Structure formats: C-alpha cells, structure tokens
Length: 299
Picture 1 (cartoon, rainbow, N blue to C red):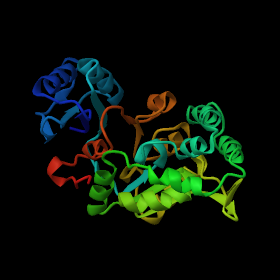
Picture 2 (picture 1 turned 90 degrees about the vertical axis):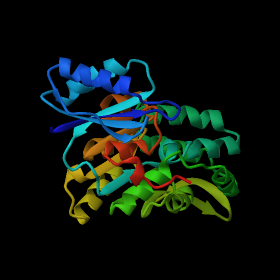
Picture 3 (picture 1 turned 120 degrees about the horizontal axis):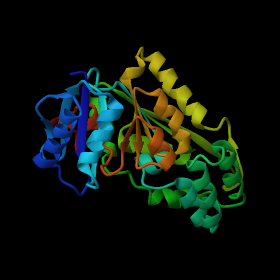
C-alpha cells in the first residue's frame, strides 16, 4: 500500500468506527484496495493504507464521507512518513495571535494595522511592503509595549507536543517568523525549538523608530531557510515538514515534503498539500504516523 489516508478528530470531536468505516467503504467503491484500520490514538486518529487511487481522488472521496464533521484528513505517501526537519511559522500557528496586530492595539492603532495584516496574509499585497508600512505606524511608541504583548502571548495547543516529540525522535525543529525577534527568542525555547529567526525592530533610547533592521523575513527567506537546513542536514525534500497559516508561508509549504496549512487563510488552504482546520498542532504528529503512546505531553 503506497498511500495512507489519516483521519484526525478535531479538538472537541471524536473519531469513531462508523466514520472510519465510511471512509474505507468510500475508497473501496472508488476502486482502491484498502487495508484494515490502524488506530494511532483511540477515538482521535486512524490510518487507512490504500492503493489504486490517486491522492486527489482519495481526498475528494474521503471528504465526502465525513461531511460536516469536525474531522481533518490528509492523504500522504506511506513511505518515510516521519520527518527529520520541521520549519514552523509563529504568528497564528505556534502562538495564538498576530503579534504586530497586538502591538498595534497596545499603541491605539489596532484597526489600521489589522486591515493591512488581513490583506497581506490573504496574499492581496506584498508581505514585505505591508510589514514596512505597519511598522512605520509604530514610530515613537515606547518599546515597553512589546513586553506587554509578550506577557499575554500563548502557545497554540499541541505546539510543545509537536516540537518535543519530533525532537525526541531526532528531528531538527526551527521557528521562522515574519514576526519579531522580541517574541521568537522567547517562544522558540518555550516550545522546544532548536533555533529561530525573525524580524528585528529598531529601538533607540527605549523608543520604536518605525523601522525594521536588516533583511526582512518574507516568503522568499522562509524558503531559503528551509532549503539551507535541508541541505546542511543532508536530507531529501521528502524528509521535511513545514507548517503555517498565511500567504507568506505558502512557498515554504509547497517546498517541503509535507506542507501543512494550519487553520489557514483560504488561499493557503486551497493550495497546501495538507490542512488542519479542526485539530491542534499535535495533529501533525498523526500525519507522520506517530502513535498516541509516543507523543510527548503538551504541558
């Protein structure tokens, strides 16, 4: 069996034998040979290995069987499922908010900045240009507003489990963000990443100048980081995993062995090889075939 359909229940949902059986029956009716269900986690995640059907057709069939249930699914190659390199976006992926939007709220210009953010994340305007425009609006603000946002920054559910588990099995895990180093340098070690990269805000005499120092971490830089680490670790493309939610993440997702759109913008969901809309970040472990007993705790 060269392909695997993985079904994963959402955070507040339950996966049962009926749903798995319906998916298996659907694949068989479409012409696939399907193996017996392999439960990765009771009532949470299950694999259906199959052959004789294209990935696109299998996703179409399986999606029809789960209907409107809060179940994520993906069809991926059965070989080499566990990845050796993870590249993750930060804002709205590893953490639960857009840091620049939160900084803007603290500065009293939340609506102005959020409108630009939405357009950038949907791919309507260039990310780099949008970043420069938004940061310029922060000129003259006290740098302490960054700490106020950092104080209420929270990791996404499953982030620690994802990074800790992959790391425990020998993977290199990196946080690459179009956000700011003030946050990446705290979030990365908190989640267990081996390193991070982000944009650096210029601060003079405790005040934001409205400028970004150095090269902007944009869509091109994210791909460069992925390719640099893949090459330096001597990995094939198939051994890499990337996850993100915005349009600036899409080239990175398309360059990885598995690119996962996590609760992502429409343009990303439509094009990414896999998507998680209902589960938490630990769902990425089930996509790699990890079993519940192998997953590190998220606390």
